[in-house]
Amino acid sequence: MNDKRDNSSFKSYLDEPVLENITLDDSQKTKFLDGETVVTHAQKVLMYTPLNEDSQILGVLTITTFKLSFASADENDPANCYQQNFLLGVNDVCLSLIDCIYLNGDKKKKLVPGQNISGKVKELLIVCKNMKYFEFSFKLSDKDSGKNIANALLHHVYPKRHQLLFAYDCKEPHEETAAFKEARLFQLKNDWEKELQRTNCPNWRLSMVNHNFHTSPLLIESLIVPQSVTDQIIEKSVEKFRNRFCPIWVWGIYRGAALVRMADLLPGINDRTEENKLLEHIRKSHPEKRPPHIIDLSSPSPKEIQSSYLKLRDLCTPDTPSKFKHQDFKFYASLDSTKWLSHVATCLSKAVEAATHIESENCTVVLQEGNGQDLNCVVSSLTQIILDPFFRTKYGFQSLIQKEWIVLGHPFANRLGHILSKDIEQSPIFLLFLDCVWQLLQQNPKAFQISETYLTTLWDSAHISLFDTFLFNCQHQRLMATMAPKNCPQLILRSVWDWREQFCERDIALFCNPLYDDSFKKTLTISPKLYNLDVWRQCYFRWISNLEIRRGGTPQVDLFTRYLVSEILHIQYNSEFNGKLTGRINKNKEEYLDLIQKVNSFFPFSHNNALVNDPVNNVLLTGDTLDSQSILNLNND
Image (cartoon, rainbow, N blue to C red; front, side, top):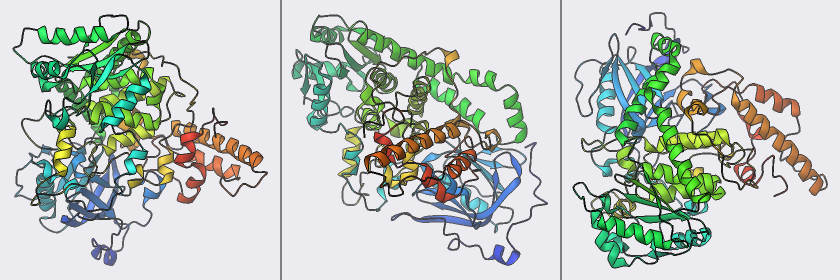
């Protein structure tokens, strides 16, 4: 590489006797879960800060069955200044998050999963699916340390069987009912009945034709279909569709318009009689017998989205200063060539089209794509967010993902690349959806209870191989994993929605939008045009320290808003409780304002925050408070 670092002048921040005594046990910042085992580790490893030739940290690099972990003996670990994960340290990543591994040096060489490295490894470059990347040097380590680390990664990062994921080995205690407080899981018949009642959409019924997944293993057991459709018709028609995904109801309005999802007919079937019969039943389900509006979602394909994402990731992971400068010089042209924002615009346009037909024309909309479980998830979810304020709350949004993505069978195991197989087509469809939601949030800042930080954290959490939420391709696969034979690993289901498994109240508080106005019930007004879209900087650029604004950026605005909320709450509580406020809110305004001025632009993901731990807890209200309070609806205590 042209920007090969000159490390000859490197001087450790540790004295030589201390340097010699760094061990895995001494670096207690590395924590292990019950069931997690160490595969290998290397001492005296140098970790470079991306694009910073002079910043090098010495520590211990460990590979376990769950994560890659780099632990430094530096006591001034910046982890206490920003988002802290109970499962992963500041320089830890789950193995499922790692995408590419390169031998680094004069030339960069991509390693092939499953290969065995026999020669000496001087440097490794590791690129993750969330744009994070690491560069390690083994020049101070023992012989074969780099080779052992590389081989361990190549073996454990790319499992060939689902049962090799860490979720099957984890023995950490878990409260199984905790997730029910955070989302409606839509795994049971009762949840779908409640949704049909909540929307008050007429002329649809709940069918158990797929009981025990008899009709389609890729769908759920409870299907909502037109009242005029018998179970026998469904059993006959379902065989004509890809993934046996026949038309099913997912949402509707009291005036009769519904939102329906379906797959294309199987390749080679030219007779559309069965499809037309079901569409006729959908027409009859409308009180005014209006024919449905069909939206084709065949483009962009998962392959096109993956290609676009890889170009975007390359743009966001420059591994040399010269590459960064070259990309920065023509950034917007390079961004345009990725077509990522074009795909975002397409999805938003389709959602606006669907929402307009449902609301303005009271017309049922049928979303149709190849397998019924990729862009259908994206556009269906966006349409409901645009029309239904319930899905803009934190609880509602998580319930929406459960309904449209988890139980309706988006193939997360395939699309997120949890398993290595030549037959699996990897594609970050879910990231595309989150980016679309972020665009909606930018154009409607008071309409969402969730924040930008929540969306970014959700994308990170989708790759943690501990939670079952994003681990499977369908609900049937999830249930089968819990009924494995005695000689197979037993899976404990853990929902990602129980955020307290990962974060403290301080971090969870940042998931809530302080500008949220729960009285805002209107349909979202958005512009899906490309020139009105922006780059999701927090998610894509947060690991590039060169792009971070020191003591500036939008997080300052966010924290100052939270500060105003806390001041108003202080006055309100003082009035209601006759001044008997028990230290809930810090009264030192100067301390608040000084703290806000120190926040950097990628907070709470920044590695450069000049914050101390204690005052942060005074500024950020608890998550429970912000769930019910905002600067615009303080009377709804």
